[in-house]
Amino acid sequence: MFKLTAITALAVAATGASATPMLTKANWDKEVKESGKNVFAKFFAPWCGHCKAMKPAWDALSDKFAADTSVLIADVDCTVEDKLCGDYGVRGYPTIKYFKSENDHKAEDYNGGRDAAALEKFVETELQVPCTPAKTDGCTDKQKEYLKKMDGKTVEELKKELERLNKMGAAKVAKDKLQWLNARKGLLPHIIKSKEGPSADEKDDMDEEL
Image (cartoon, rainbow, N blue to C red; front, side, top):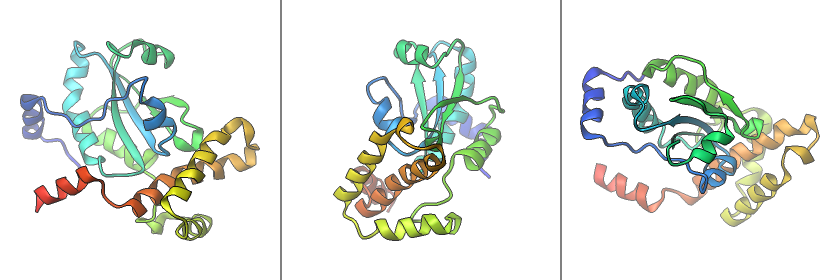
């Protein structure tokens, strides 16, 4: 289990560095609604004392799951994105919400603990997708069949399929088929990622580590 030690917290606070992705009105559809990922978002204001206190744990959480293709840990700066924050009923800071692909990314309030251990446990138990091309042990037989079927398609074909599913929307799908629709929308980004391989930035990071 990940633990945010006092030394780590001080180091993050001292540098002010954070790789936590920032969500905006402009990138919301791409990063949330069309990503197929489950999203854990912290709506904050830079001047907020509670937000500052929580920042090290949240940034460390984001770093831990940065390479996970099933979940996104992100920030929303409400002093900049006031319309976006208003759309989701944010009235105090920090407000934490999560958006599940299987629920068509409808906003749900997070009311759990805000320490590092509680946040990580929630991500692992509620937001991480157990079935991906790299993690088939958690797949159902139906998901395994789907992965095998999609493996024969090109990246472009997979992207077109994901675009088609995203356009369908919950309103056009019978309730008994909605869960499978969302499951496919969740799987496809992982399948595409596995076929594309690491991005240029990821390759640079791997070279630096070597």
